[in-house]
Amino acid sequence: MRPFRAALLSVGTHVLFQLSSQDAGQVSQMLDGGRPLTERLKNLPNRQFILKTGAERWVEGRVPRVDEPEVDYTDLLNRVRYRRGRVRAHIERDIAQRQAALRRNAEEDLQ
Image (cartoon, rainbow, N blue to C red):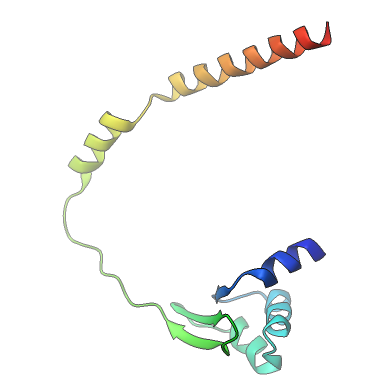
């Protein structure tokens, strides 16, 4: 767990949403927030977060509400799928061909 902790602590900015009890305690300790921060992290309402950046003290924020546009996007979605999408059977065929080539190469290397 130490490499994970070291990696997490090396990040310059942390954005935290509601956490489990165990995670909240560990993160609160990491941020030097004590019991009040632990309780806040466990009980954050929807769209609220805790932000810790650099050497600054943690602050609480709220994610703005984003309204969904009331437009029909199915035409755009279908055009993108037609232009960029691939048939699943073709993808699976390509994967099978790559795996077969790797097996052949491995068998040749063993001989």
